[in-house]
Amino acid sequence: MNLLTTSWGGFDLARFPEDPRDPLRAWDAADEYLLRHLKGDEPLKGIEDAGPTDLSGSVVVVGDRWGALATSLAEHSPVQITDSFLGQQATRANLARNGIDADTVALLSVRDVPPERIDVLLVRVPKSLALLEDQLHRLAPAVHADTVIVGTGMVTEIHTSTLKLFERIIGPTRTSLAVKKARLIFCTPAPGLARTPGPWPLRYALPADAGALAGRTVTNHAGIFCAERLDIGTRFFLRSLPKRRGPERVVDLGCGNGVIGTAAALANPEASVTFIDESFSAVASAEATYRDNAGSDARAEFLVGDGLSGVPADSVDLVLNNPPFHSHQATTDATAHRMFGGARRALRSGGELWVIGNRHLGYHARLRRLFGNCEVVASDPKFVVLRAVKK
View 1 (cartoon, rainbow, N blue to C red):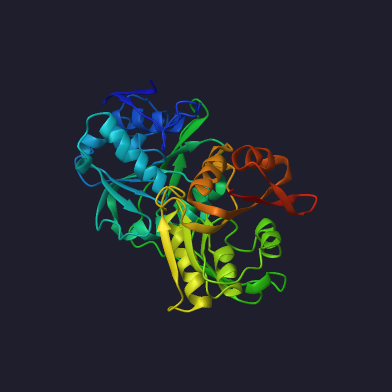
View 2 (tube, rainbow, N blue to C red):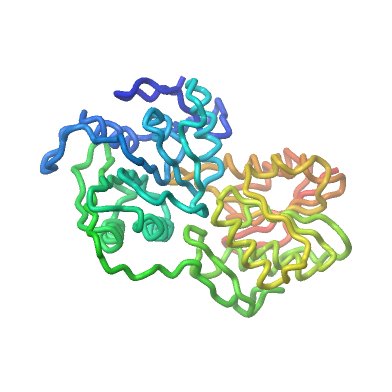
């Protein structure tokens, strides 16, 4: 049992989807540090108010990765705001696992309208500085002079640039000492602070070597991987995509900003493309990229979800996949392996999975075990494009 012990009680927590073999917990020292501070259990040198935080007003939790904070604070009816579908599902599952009514926590995505008033703002610092910037801009109008704002993260996640964002968008900011390699951020709202809006969504034209999308515009909401330029792996994949014709169902799995699926749609206008990602911002970016380049009447579907779990078995002809190999700060191949398994289930007999990955990740071995075959379509010193066929 993975039990998080807090002053609010002990909570059995798991990541989503739950995997008994997964050694990673659903919380870390940064979550524990914040919870101890809120209860007044963590004396902090140099911090004037070291007593319990008044949580009787509107409490908003941003970036809660697996629901540890929202579950622990459920008796205060917090609003959770996240960009992660899996994080939302983990919160629902953890509330149920601990016998807590799901209605006690309001679950919002970063694309939803935030609360109009925030009395306590708790921020789990994300990996993406852009996502933090965008969220602080969105939430700043709801913050008032008496709002308590506390951020948390591991020391490797909190940089000078992180503190400058809080300072520039919200108000004066300072940090705590590190405890178990975690740190707290304290920000005092400055009413009337002049704010320069962030650049999001960011749009740019794709380079000449981007295949069917050369010269076209891509849209990136905050938090998308390589949002300011086309990453070299995707560029390599675009040059190596299959040339197919006819009415078929294509899935851009882990779609990000949607350039791969949009390129496939332009190359085969008869295809119906489904864009899937667990990031709400990614799917919004993919839809904008697709609509700008393929037209509003083109056939496409946009799904925020857990991989291909919502796609019927034996219903897909082609899956295009650039799998992530990080889960927040942790390096893991678990997500890629789940994507490969989901693709095999969703593909029709004769359907194909095309994967781009770093050479050192060794995806070919996994695909051979799963599909019974794997072909190298293209490679360079850094990347490899693999093709597996469902027999």
